[in-house]
Length: 267
Length: 268
Image 1 (cartoon, chains in turn brown, orange):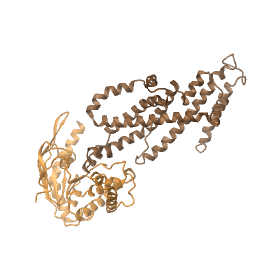
Image 2 (cartoon, one colour):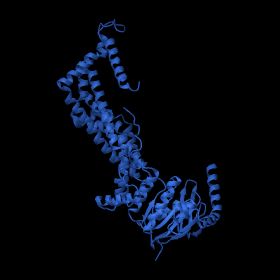
Image 3 (tube, chains in turn blue, red):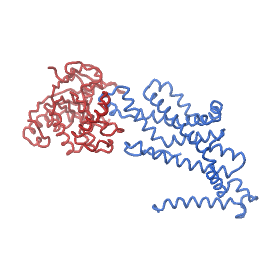
Image 4 (spheres, chains in turn orange, brown):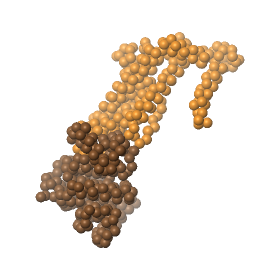
């Protein structure tokens, strides 16, 4: 069983799509929910047509520019959000006064559903990639911020004292102890924050844009083209899987000094 | 010439939730240049507090520490500190951990690496330069910490039960290596331990502390065993047994007191 896991996983996927096709295709089996035999295909689409859409996207190359835009937005949101979260997390973690002052604001901003900011970003940054990046940044920032903040507080006091005894000044403590320790926390939240950057990009595109996979889905939905909507969702899922795999590889390379890989929540 | 380390009526009182707690009280003690002094005492008697005071990590409530005659202000730059628990930076490999102190002092990286490799060789860790602390055994981590401290050539070594986490064989090996490194250029050592045998076999002098709170030295015993010593062999000599017996007699009461207090604290 274990050896053929791959095979069984793929077989299950194929079976799922086959069942879907059988249930949705008009006039293949007698309709049992709706009177109209075309109704099921209208609501749920047909895998064969979905894959035809995907095939056309990739063979004619129309999808690449959209994927590229979504990837750009995700990457930018991740990098900007992480750097901001790291900087502010370090600052508040090391300064009790600042942390006491900002604490209620941070809590409030984190509690706020940030997707509602999307229209405001649209007004501020236009329909291009930057309004999506801004939305992604607000999502990524808090994950990284809280991780770094916690990481700074949990730096081993013995390691800290040892580094002081070796002659490190305040700046060197920041560079040699706090920053690496905080960075390791950023990496341990890598899966979650990259996922959030991706969510920000796609939701932003969906709410208003001229390019990107979210835009494709939104367009198709406007035309009641359910097959294209599903095609977009499948492409996004595959894209997210590739992204997650890349993150896993990066994590393994960057955290070699870690005794055990920490478990992160998957989105 | 003034002593390397002088405690002058050091008292440390900590403010706690249930009122203040005096860890050490009126400790006066001197460690000469090149002298190896062990401080033994029952568990939880404030031994580490004393060491943190000499290191400059902790300011005493009253009293003064003098280092080679000068009052200590801030971190003690002439001392190297070896901690009881893991103190290596887990994100730096063995070599980078050893060279950290040199980097802080602005030594060029090539020069620091060269000296770092040299020190790793001296503590027997050639070939382990690229290992991260979690990839090293407990004994290897202690060796790395020893090299990390000694590469800076401090005049005073402060050691807080550095080998207590090691198994007995590794421990005796480390003790012998420490003695060998120390005899090459006699530095002043303040060695904290709760293990009387370890204290006698390493030191020139053993200081016994009373049980806490308000710990103070209650006895000093010069150790006249010949050097160089082998820590596992010297334990079997008659003189060692005699010294051990004498020091133990003075310690026994305090150990029992300390033990009773710890028990009360747990049951309270």
